[in-house]
Amino acid sequence: MSAPRMILAATDGTDRSRAVLGRAALIARHWGARLALVHIRKPGRRFRLGLARTATRDLMADLTEHGGHPEDLYVLEGAPAEGIAALSAQLQVDLMVLGLHRERRVLDTLRMTTMERITLAVDCPVLVAQAVPAQPYARVLAALSFDPVCTGGLALATRIAPQAQFHAIHALPVPSPDTQAQRDSTRHSAEALRDRFMSGPGLPPNMPQPEIVRGGVHEVLSYRMAEWRPDLLVIARHSGRDRSRLGNYARDLMRAPPTDMLVTTPNPDGQDHPSRASTLAARS
Image (cartoon, rainbow, N blue to C red; front, side, top):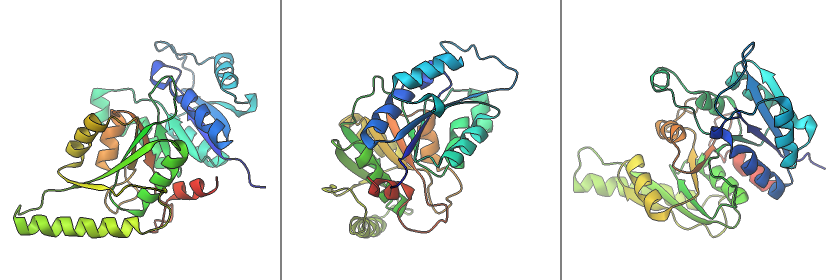
């Protein structure tokens, strides 16, 4: 008998992460997964930020109230990204649930945020949760590059949102030079990628054909978000071929997500086959 899935919820105890435990618990109940909660404290520093509730007794009460067990509470000291990544590897976490990023305008322009470092350090999908109270997802929008990692993201999204409607888009960049011949060529290439993507294994049943829309990713996403009003956005962690870096679009969206956001991760070996997310989905 295989071990149950593990969902790790990370909280800083403030209003930014108030949606984390409820969402993680909802998914854990649906999956029959173990639910763990982690809070990282800086050594020698008490945390008194806003509505923070980081006393061990408060964290324990929150976890048990959401169906977790006392032994699955982890209160650690050190750097948050390193501590959470190490715990994720130790527990073999299947899904990480994080809260919203705390904006620091100057520092954010100079270095990666804690959320970005966590997302890069773990080898499981990351869900950024902000909707309170947690309700089953009803409308899922996926931004696709037609990379195999997107297949895993969609497969996992169907497990997180089994009753939801799905819509998928691919942003078609404006070619240079912007001639009709170049437009036709880029669209035909994108359509060929879409056809190959849709013929591959691991996609959700009844997956609608992804829409190819001319324009930049931010522009296309913004338009479709306003029009379709999804409550979950699915996007791959990387862009292009460099799987060791967070893609620009994923980074920008994670810093100010328009809704809950599932960030999928490539395989550690970098091979072009569905990500760990699709493997997890297949285990249900």
